[in-house]
Every structure is written in structure tokens, then in C-alpha cells.
Image 1 (spheres, one colour):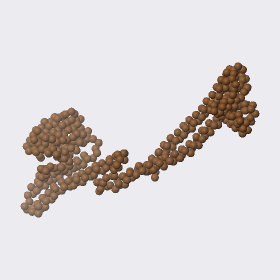
Image 2 (image 1 turned 60 degrees about the vertical axis):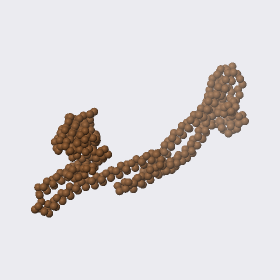
Image 3 (image 1 turned 180 degrees about the horizontal axis):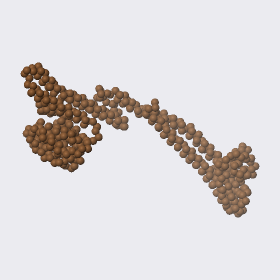
Length: 456
């Protein structure tokens, strides 16, 4: 299973532990070797100091006991000419000296010439063949009543080497066992940890557009997996809400398109059934009105669809918003009070014209006699307000009216001409330009719509 996360985690954990064990083993072997070799060197130095101090004080020389120095094999005392005048054997009981000589255990001293001469002076047979690295030699020159003397201590590294070898053998056995144990433990623990993930995957695999209401099983704990499940369920809720809005949008759009189409068809069927009594100019006028309604609806739907696409920015055109508002006010059917300050914004002139047109059209539809439009600048933001003298918008509906195909009860008549997407377009265009739109109470008694868009 090369793509298994469980396998990758196990391999990574094993590789990491193997690297740590390898480095740690090397450091441990190095530390043990430095420790035991340093102990041998220190022992040789202490033995040299002991014998040198005795010679200086003209005291009798005696071999050190095994408890004092178990590493030093020979201590040589040389005169001024380099001749060995005395030999002390330390670290080895006298009863074992002859046995060591007979067994050849002192052969390791062969590479050191003086040690060979000293061993042969004791009547011991010494053979060559061992490296000088197996010996530690410490020396010190002192003045004695009999003249200058040089004290040389020769120690054997074999016990230290055996300790290092034992450490290496122990690591060669324990390290692989530990590595295999951790690999198996990681495999088991990772499998247990990833089991809920597999359950989530199986459940997610069953969710489609037909059952978006289903949710993933949430863990009782609030760990990373629990938070991931919660986030995925929240995403499913958003997807379900989006799918619901899409179905509702399609249903509402179909209904809104079907209404004028049915009216057109009925008008034509009646006229064709009684052509001699039909008022053909009147039929043409009503059909043209329904055509305009269809045209506005399809244009608004197309604009909404385009604004729902992920666009990089709102455009880079410099738009004089006062000119756009002035042009749209010419089509107002009510008395207009306008106070327009010349302000410039970055964006799309056509989309901003649609925003202004929908606001003025909404004010004309629900106003009684007059509307008031003001355009000003406030803290680097263009502020456009459109007031009417109508009934206003209830506070409970002030956010809902910006949803698609939302119409309040008093505006449901077809004669009003509204299909419920004009204000939705206003909010979408404002958001697309980095602005906002809100509704409140107007001073003249109706509704006040306020749009804020950043200046250039």
C-alpha cells in the first residue's frame, strides 16, 4: 500500500528512530571509549607520579595494589643513559605473574621496545605482532639521590577495548529490537488513530446532491479530528444551503418567466380565436409590455449570474457617479429632489448604472409623489441615498428584501412590475465594488436606501 498514510507514518517514525539510534549509538561508543581509555591513561599517570614521588623522597618502591591501579602492567625506572635499572609490576598479584608469562598474556607489550626488554629481563618470553595503539605509556623525569631518573609506566588497553566491544555488541542486539518494536507499535497506534478517518471517508463517499442533509459522524473529543469533522459538517451545511438556494432560484426564475409567457400566449390565443373582434393595436401594446418585462428579467438574471462568478476585481474604469445618477433620474415617474456632488469611483459603469436604476425604479414603484436622491462624500467613501415617501420597509424585512425573488405582501401584484431580484442586484453590485447597501427610514416617511462605495 504505497499510498497509505499509515505506512508512510510508520516508515517515517522508524526512519527517524533509526537515525536517532544510529547517532546515539555512535556517541555512546565514543563516550565509552573516551571514558575507559581516559581511565587507563589517568591510571598510568597516577602510577608514574606515585613512583616518581617515592624516588624523590628516597623511599622504598613497592608495587601498587590491584585496588589502586588495575591497568598498569609495568613501571620502568631508567637512568640518565636510558638503561632500565628497576622494574615494578603493578595491577597484577605476584602469584599470577608467572602464569601470565607462561600463557603469553604479556605478548601485547611486544611493540614497545622498552617493555619487551623489561619483560625479557624478568625472564618472560615476548612475541611481536600487536599494535602500539594497544599500549598507553606515561613518563616523568625526576631528580633522585642516585641521580636523574625517568619513570615510565606501560598500561594495557585490552580491558578497555573489551568494554567498548561489549558495548557495541549490546547495541547491535538491542537497537534493532527496539527499532522493530517501535515500528510495530507505531503501525498499531496509527491504525487505531486513523480508523475514525476511514469511517468519515466511508460516510462522505455516500453523500451526494440527493442527500446533502446527511452529516459525518462527529467524534466526542475536541481534538484535531473532531475539529476537522465539525468543519466538514459546516461545509456540508453551506453546500446544502447553496444547493437549496440554487433550486429555489431556478424555481422562482422559471415561475417568473412562465408568468409573462403564459400571458403572451393567452393574449395571442384570444386574439386569434376572435380576430374580427381583436383590438390588434392594444394586443401589440400589451405584448410589447410583457416583452419589456421579460427583457428586464432576463437581463437581471444574466447580470446576477455574471456577478456570482469569481471575478478578480470590479474593474478599473473611473466612473463619475454623479453623471450616472443624473442620467437614471431622467426616467423617474415621480417628482425628484436631487443633491448630487461630483464623486468618482473605480468600477464598472454599466453595473453601477444598473444599481442606480434599480434603486430609483424601486423608489418610483413604492413612493407616492416624490423621491429624494443625494450623493455625497464621507471619509473617502461615496454615499448615495435614495428616499421615497411610501410606506417604508418593516424592520423585520430590511435584510430579507435583498434576497433573490423576495417581495413583500403589498408588492405581489403583477401590475407592480417587480420580480424580486432588483434589490438583490443592488447588494451584489455594491459588494462587488467593495461597498455595502442598507435600508432604513427616510425623513419623508418612506424607505431610505443607502449605498456606500469606496472612492478612487
